[in-house]
Image (cartoon, rainbow, N blue to C red; front, side, top):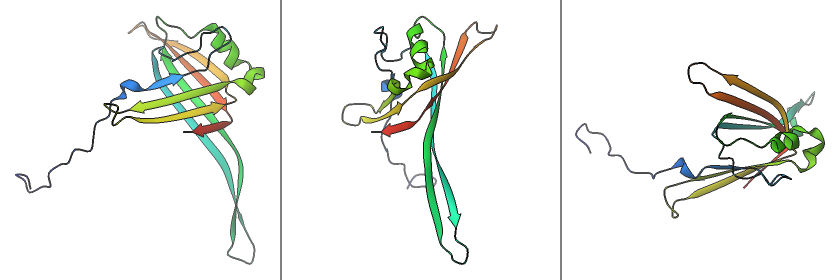
Length: 155
């Protein structure tokens, strides 16, 4: 027990976010790579529609699973490395959806012994929105991207 009669803490481990990576598959112009492009945020949402059916005269309920779908949003600072125009042409063209894939990989830990890895792969990705914002106070250009996708693999 410590001075105040509390249980002493136990160390649960450390995490370092230095190894977090976002990758895109190689584009036709060879510009796809790790997205070290001042990426500030990446958010993905993957949902499935589930309907509940109730049966008259019984206490049975039934679930009917519909199709799954996803959305992703990314924000970045426009800086010394820019996303290639080919990225916008590829992911922005709905006709390319069949081959558009986004990989999101996470590594966290402090050394090889404690390194944890997870990966997410979004298929049939299409860029649906791009916006730019600038503020006089910091002279930075903020770029936001929104995408849709239809399936998500977790590994």
